[in-house]
Length: 140
Image 1 (cartoon, rainbow, N blue to C red):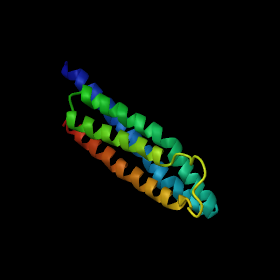
Image 2: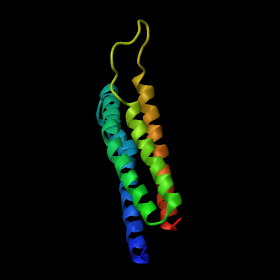
Image 3: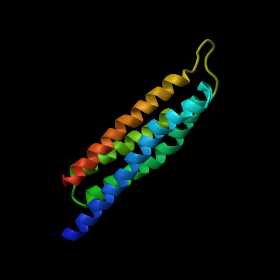
């Protein structure tokens, strides 16, 4: 593959990774801080869960795109790490899927724990996306 094409693909993958990192930071840190400052606790909790539920597919798509571009640019390690981050963002969405049916008698759904875990997962896979971008920066 021509070297200039590899450089272009690697740079496009870095751009996609940077967009995913920035968007996930806004979804997991900036927006919840604003929500809990301006809304009541229950409304802020619902807003954060809805925000993460709706942004996770786009974050996963951006990281899957970055992973494919890294692989085409022959940066195999960063491509694999980016694909792991993409799977993680999609898994976060599945965790926040709407509840189906009724709970068994005496069983309660703990939505606050669900929000905390999903924010933790988003941050963990943001760090994974950052690692993929750093590895791609060095062409690994």
